[in-house]
Length: 306
Image 1: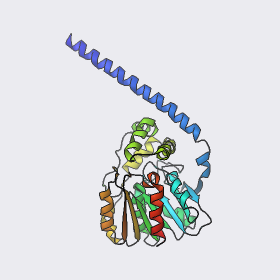
Image 2 (image 1 turned 90 degrees about the vertical axis):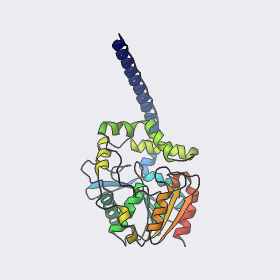
Image 3 (image 1 turned 90 degrees about the horizontal axis):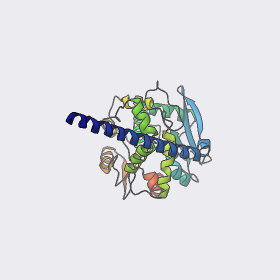
């Protein structure tokens, strides 16, 4: 009798969990469809493409007529549109090239690509060479900051200055290597993505909340098996081991409320880099150029124009 009751409770619990999962999936699909309908055309039409190292790389250009050039690299689960507000504010004085890394945004998402940060850096360097982008200042956010550091490590004279936005690279572990079907659910489920976004930012205003829709729209295009390949990619050298060899002028910008790459990371970068300045933005999370584009613009202009 007791066993039957236990089995009944287990069965009812499983049914309830299943129904909740189905309801969340249906709701997510409806929200995803609505968001995708909103972005048909529009931001997709602003992208340019270049063939490099056997793959198609997408990028956005702002202020094309200007000589002074900034190159921006986004972070994990980001894309080139993340820099839109900042690039628009700077485009009267600078040419900005914002790149979609292979595997993200509107760039190719191949399974046979080496997703290590060092190889991503080489792909970006090859693209900039093909576009004849030189000289330039190089900026990277989170994972993109680590890629920027590895690019400078391999090509010390490639960039004139370096900007690290809430840079990663001090961790030694990769994102968890979930099976592809789990990654598909994470990447394509609205509620999971929104939960992650809310953890990333701090007290978002309406503009910041609206930006989530763009990020979600782009991330639904990433196959789960590509995320799996990304999680398996490793680099031979840790960033912390070569920071003291970099002499490039560097601006380090972190948010005081960053829970992904905490301000202590910025302090470590500032101490290890020979020629750096550290800016800490109060009441800002992991996306400083989205949460506080004006403050970041001011810091960038002061750094680039001194």
